[in-house]
Length: 640
Image 1: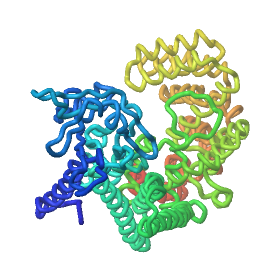
Image 2: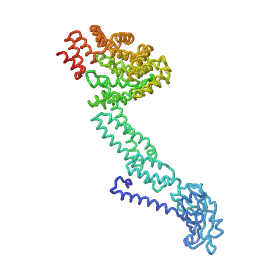
Image 3: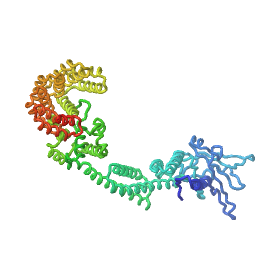
């Protein structure tokens, strides 16, 4: 009989079948609440002279209408004995034949505690109430009344009196409702408590219905997951995507959870059908796990092969390496440098130009899938890119536009807990970096290294980071207060001095800003940002001679692309074109992929009157950014 109903149509008929089934059980239980016992046996014929008594469960007053509440309050079970026929009990029977009646349950004998006779109007004993100790019964098991003449048919207490009946009844109702809603796992979780050998469970009138529900929960769950798995296998053959891998991972997780949950059922129900279901589930878990491992490996190779085999001439490789390097460097605070952490995927929003470019090319999801895989590698292998990928990057050093090899190498070193190696690679990154945003991020990483190495207190770092947060929010007053706090706590630590200078620069207090930049440079001569601000100030004021002197000082401690470019710019404005060209060529030797440097080189040649070489320089700029208005204007100026 199919007990589950999953649709409104035909549901009424199925519910009727369930009710009928329960009714049959209840009727049987009702009949089992009365039994008969041979009380006395005559030695003569006919056998109709035998005396038989009827035995019923009752309360202390002999009433059969015993409620659950009344039953739970007493520690005694009462039964009344009533003669069947026209005869009555005799006084002497109380201590003789009636006293000899006892209860047997599962080979255990239970003796009566008390015998209470009931008299009619003629002072005849028409029935006897006998008390038995309740604590000696297993309430859910049948028992018989016995005497020297034999045993009665077994009597069973109504199941409403059994231990936890209400709990089991509610569980059954809830489990059936969940199964009807096709929530089979939830249904099983509720009904699994029926998987017990306790008599108060197995004897319940709805126990068979529960076992049918449990079997259906197990069977439907396994068949459903098998069907989902078969469909997904075909889909994976067509498309090895992260979405499909996530679906496969979910199936594995759900089937493995089901396997653990259903173990209690398989241990309890030992049938050919249950063993087949158990084997089917085991095979499904094994096969889905193996397939996930296989396809995850292929997916990793597919997604990460771009780093091992790509070339900068391929935009996908170039864009991926560029954005990966930026996301690795991204930080908005000074922090402790101690180990390699996973890449914050949300940091991609800090680079909207690069992010939107990938989105336009429909590569963004693929890139993020690769980042997620790299995060798994970072967590398990403690590196960003493997040796093959790093060899590939190293072979293309002359064609990389920014110091990608050095940046990724720095974080690989961090994964090995090589803090000094991290510092060296970050320092090397400064040399050829032409991107101001990336340069700023690299410097925060370097300052974090210095703070870690020099043991700068968490109080100082906390004040600086609060200042950075307020500055980002535009709250310059609070930012200034935090930077001053940090500068007073650590007077020989350069960053607070620089950040104060930056605050005053934003407040158009230029001369005060210069003082703090000078302080920062004096404390840390290799500190790039304050020197760059000072030189920019001097060029902005057209004080090119002093700018030239400052940039030469900067180059002594930091021979990096930015300072060579600023040196060439200062010399150009001083009309010292040959020296400017020499300085710019040094910058180009460090990084030949910056647009502005070729514009400046063209301007230098134009200043020398060498229009042909100026055209060549401008065209080199055009190769980098052909739609840039500065390029088109410069080319147009050569025709005048």
